Structures are given as structure tokens and as C-alpha cells.
Length: 528
Image (cartoon, rainbow, N blue to C red):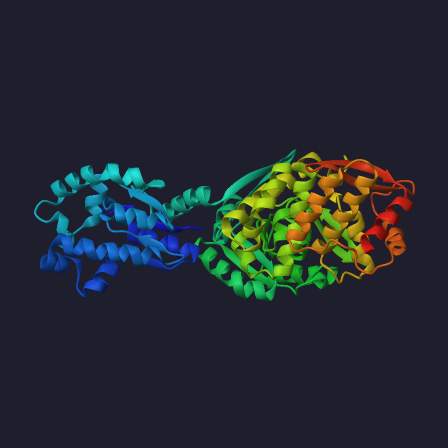
């Protein structure tokens, strides 16, 4: 998220409101006037008396340059800062410019003693009116957002600013279901803005389910920043990995929530990858017969896929044997959290992103071919683009088939019939993404053999998978063993194997029955 620079006339509340905005974000607060005084070694009235306005403006330019280069930061700018084009140019590199306004009567009441306002000496009312007439058009010209603070308390003004910033810094799509709708927000550095979604849902207290290392890296700061909004998060750390997808783990979460006296007006905030989302979703669906769920996915796989759709699950003798459909109240995907993701997990998430493009969005597939380097380098802009477009694809399938009854979601299983067999045969020693990558290559080859897909398109898919650093060949597993495991796939009907196969990049056909021998030959070919 970009820095926030507050501009406007003296008395609009830039300092007091700026401090409150910074507190709610958990960011540092910087005042350019304070930086000027530090550089000058004296107060601003003294600086004006000794060197005049020209000296002050020169030091102010240096202060603006210093403040703008802090990341992240909320910056309160002196009233004359936007009048200098060099200052505006410097701020625009890193900041959203938020203009605070107020009526003249309010401004004069807030300014108080003009002794500390050199530009108002002599005739405070007249000078203020004249300066405001001169500056107001420029203020409006450069502002990204305008907030009138007349009659607003400091907390109310801060909240108004953050609502506006959220609209500019978050890309939002709505998942609209017959009986429920929720937003999916995507951006960089936007975690604290989940407070807006909690408040909108009327949730003032919630359990924060996350892993211990994520609690240290992101959760503790989130708890502190949400406290500044008047919200109360109760951290409930859970162990990483599949061992947390159990009834035993769920029971420990229930007990922690009950001990914190969380009730039906409370919520669950799940900060983590797919396992945390599954556990948090299951707990939210069942605690007090269902409370609001807020998903904060921190893996690429969860951001592009698992966090959207409402499926929750726990393991019992088999993976995902028990679960529920429980749609979230909101999903907030902060791509800045992907910077701490191990490279192998980032690549694993790319497998699902490539799958979405392959089955439903040829332009996205082409975009990936040209922008994969930026994604792998974890640049914010390409990551936001990737996650937003993938979320839209997943949401489209979810809306069409919310509870997997119409068969529309079967398209999402491209690559997964082989992948699930691989995962089971290797006792889950490979990541889901690595299995899906191999499964897509195998099932694309199968589509070529059936005459559904051209050789060039299959090669294009395989090249993109390899470019992402994902495997394209089968590991040393007996193809017959994989075939036997596929017979247990949920898409099997009357003993016949059924696949979702590509008909072209961006097009998929579901329910394709394939003879076992043809599957076996394809698997053998991929091992040679």
C-alpha cells in the first residue's frame, strides 16, 4: 500500500487525524513541520524571523523528500507543501495525497493563537481567507481523495480517510450467491484494512487463528492495529501442516474461543494458508451454529484458489472426510505476505493459477507467459493482477455451482485426477502444486491422444509450467499403481474414469470418459 500524505490548510486536522490514521494502520507518523524544525534547530516562527519564508520553503522541500522516502508512513504536510510542484512530484512517487478540508469558521477556531502561524500575523481572519482562496484550487488539483473534517471527530475523520484509501488501494470483486454475497479484496500491505470488513459485519470481537510464526510476523501487528479501531482479536495459535486439520485441533480452538467468551456476535479471522482456512472455516461454521468468517490467505495457492468457494474440511482417517460449506464474510488477500513465502510454495500456487488460465481465460494465460518473471520476483503489481484475475475465475465457478451439485465445478479438476493419485502414491511428500503441474501435463497429453487438444497447445501449456519452475515429468511411481488409485476418484461413474480435459487454451470439457489403457499409455510415456 502506498504512503498516505495529508495535505490541506492549517487547522484541517492533518496532525491529529494523521496520528490516528497511523495508529490504526500500525505505521509511523511523520510531520514535515517537525522535520523542518529539527533541521533548523529552532521553531518555525523563529525560522521565519531569522531567515524568512524562502529559507523555510527550502528546508520544507528537504523534509518532504525525506518523509516521502520512508516506507510505510503517514505524512502530515505543511499547508504550503502542495503549492510547490517539486514537493508534489516527490510525494507522488510513494504516496496517496489526501486533502483535508473544513469551513473557514472551523479552521479559525482550530488554529487558535496566530502567534505560532507566521503567515496569519496581523489579520488572522483576513489572511486565512486570502490564503485559502489562493491555495484551495491547487489542493483540489493534486488530491487523490478529499475529506471534509468539519464536524467530524478525529476517529471519525480517520475512518473516513481509511475507507477512501481502501477503495483506491484494494481491488475488490463481489462473490454473489443466491443467499449470500461477500467481497474479495486484493492489494499489497492491506491487512489492517480488514477492520473495515469486521465493522461492516458488526463484529467487534474475533478469534485470530494462525500459525505461531505468522502470529509473530503479521498477527501481533494486526492485533495492535485493530485494537486502535476498537476491535478485539484473540490469537489462537495452531501447529502448521495437516496435523491441525483434525477434530482434536478444532476442539482446542473451540475451548480457547469459549474461554475468551466469544459469542454469536463474534467472528473468526483465519490468517494463513489452506490448512488454516480449512480449520478456521470449519470452526466458524460450527461454533455456536455458525459465526462470520474472515479469510486472510498468506499463500499464493490460498489466495488464487482455496480462500474462495466456502469449502471447509478436517481429516478423519482420510483427507477432508468431514467438513461443511461455509461462505466467508470477506476475503482479504494481501500479496505483501507472499514475500515471506518459501519459493517452492510460491511456485506451487502458480500451478493453480496456470490451471485457471488454461481452463477459462486464454488472455490470462498469455499474460502469464509475458509476466511470470515479475510474479516470481514477488513484485506487488503483477501479483495483485494475478491474484485478482484468478479470484474472479474461481468465483465464477463457485457462483455457478456453489455446493458442487450441478457439475460446473468439475472444470476446476483439470490436472487433479492424476495429481490426487500422485499425492496418495507418494504419501503426500510432494506439494499439491507440484502434483497438479504434473497432472496437467499428463491430462493435456491425454487430450491430445483423444483429439481434443492440438500438440502446439499442449506444448504451450507444458512450456509455461516449466517456466514457472514446476515439474513436468512423472516421478518413479508405477503407472499401474496410479491408475488403480484413480479408480477411487470422486468423478468415477459406474467404474469408468472421467476427466476434465482441455479443448484449447481457455476451454475445457468435463465428464470425458477415458479407457484405462489409454491413461496407462500416457502415464508410461511421461516417465520415459
